[in-house]
Length: 302
Image (cartoon, rainbow, N blue to C red; front, side, top):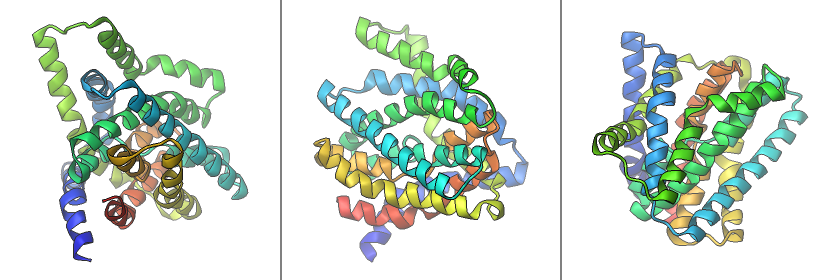
C-alpha cells in the first residue's frame, strides 16, 4: 500500500495540483475557459507539436511501431464504443460525444509528464510518438466525428483545413526532411511557447471542469469511464505484445492508453457543439478516477 501511495504522490499529485490551481482560479476570477482553450489551440499547441517532432531522435522502426500501436488501439476502442453506444440506444449527438471521450485521451498534458516522472526520458520519447499519432487522429478523425454531431460529413472534412496543428505537422516534417534551421529569434519563440503548452493545458483542464454536468448522463458517463480507464489499458497489454513493444516503449504505450479523456475533446466538443457539457463531465470524472486505475498500473509496469 505504501508503494502505491508513493507512486501517486510522486507521479500523479503534481498533475492534479496544477489542474486544481486552474479550477480554483476559475472559481475566484470567473475566467472563460473558451478564451484560454483558443489561445492553447491556436498558439501553444502548434508550437508544441512542431517541437516534439523536430526534437525526437527515435529510429524509424520505433516510430512506426508505436504509431501503428496507437492507431490499432484507436480502431479497437472505437469499435467497442460504437457497439456499446448502439446497444444503449444513445442519440446521435451523445454517441458522438461518447466516441470523443473514449477514443481520445490526455496523452500529452497528462501522459507525457506521467511517463517522464514514472519511467524517465526514454519512456517519454516513446510516449511522445503515441501523443503525436493521437494528436493527428484527434485533429483529423476527431474533428470529423465532432462535426458530424451537428453537420454533414463533407462539412466535417472541410473543417480539417482550419486546424493550425495540421500545418505545424507539415512544417515539422519538411523541417526534418530538408534539414532546415530556424532563425534564432523564431527558434526561441517556438521553444518558449512549446514549453508553456503542458502547464497551460493542465490549468485549462481545471478551468473546464467547472462546467461539468453529471446528472443527465449517468449511463453514458459510466460507459465512457469504463472503456477509457479499464477496458482500453487491458486491451493494450495484449496489443502491445502483438506489436512487439518492449521495455520503455511497452510502459509508455500502455500508460498512454490508460489516460483519462482528453482536454482537447472538450475543446472540439465546444467548437462543434457536440454535447460539451457531457464531454466536460466525462473528462472530469475520468480524470478524478484515474489515480485508482493508474497507480496500480504503474506498479504493474514497474
